Image (cartoon, rainbow, N blue to C red; front, side, top):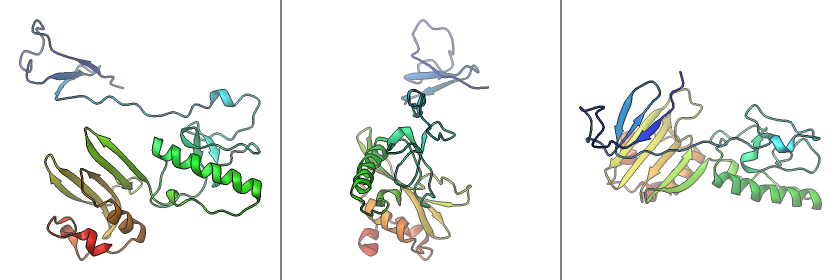
Length: 228
């Protein structure tokens, strides 16, 4: 059964949960009756392609997730109609380390590439698939910390057949590397690690890192200098 959260703060007059009352600043109560205490709650929602108002009178091919299917030139099935960002769904063979996640980063990249494709079509020029579709990359800030996501950062599509290397310094940095047969497939970095460029290269060139093992994340080794 789907559990839907309800957030609340304990009042001093509340007689429920005497054993946990006051231990946490905020609580979440699920519809199954379970209550969990927390320091803070992040409430987030996903993105659903909003295509319903585009379908009447048109012949768009629609993906199972509701997005407009586009080819590797971001063309829809309607002549001279392009789609980019949240509203579209890729219908080409994806790179091993890229997948669609409906984020502003990808929307901006797709929009730029769509413009190039339109220009190429009008000028009859040949262009190649943009490099941004080779590797999933997303950069943001969360609670003041820099967050970088690269490649298959959560083992997407690997069916659990991977190893994880971790380096963690509380309050400073968190580094997670997803490895398959000694080769890096993805990475997640929080904080000022300065490793994003190095890890990007290691994912793209698929260098065998087996000889390094857990030493790959040894803070006493400047791996960015070694591999750059």
